[in-house]
Image (tube, helix red, strand yellow):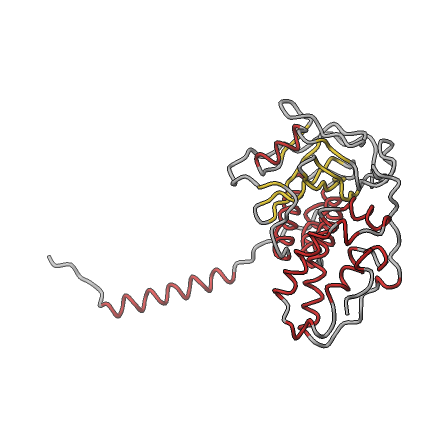
Length: 336
């Protein structure tokens, strides 16, 4: 007895019809959306968007620290240097009796176990728990557990975020990882070169998920107290105000690029910048960095655009000198 087969055109027609019916059935399915429960899940997307929208490296990293508060953490960013780890800024440490001022300038010595493990592995490290390295100390109090996360920028660990429970809601380690990753990518997108400060990041390798610090801190909220208290941060002089926007996109691009180059100098030399502003020797103190940045600026920005204004010098005054041209020393006057 022979086998009966449908004509090929009939098979094709039936296949198309079934596909149309399946699509229609899927489109008719209503997928229930859970009601929002509040907490990190609601705030995390906004925090990531704020990081992504930030203009400049400093703004990105400040947005990261602000975002950490929605994950139930107080957080501080430490810049990686050969001599150790130097505090840049923090959030959530106000009122901490162990800190006399802001996080800026607070130091963690080179060789500190938890920080070194971050540098060696390039992965987040939990501290303070069983089998974990001790919590790094920079004068903070009320800390039993902490999480350290690397800020990786173009193959280098430019900084390490220290986070511990603030006591204001559950500590969300996963959210912190998302925020730090978003900030790393945002800085990398803007960075004109790989950071000169910092250390090479190891090649990625599978790392165990760090345990979330469970215990809430007994006290604490935001920063108060630099290690070098003699260097006071001054309010920018009126000259530090942003110039009015230009209708020329090329001019705006030049200003933006100059700002990024100079922000990089500030980002990785925070304490030195404060001292240089006070002693009015920024041009001498950071001569090599300024020369490198200027060379990159002139390589990227055409002579035609540079002839419309010295936007690089503008950035030196506004960003590096904090609005005080005299703080530049030998570069106080704009080159003619």
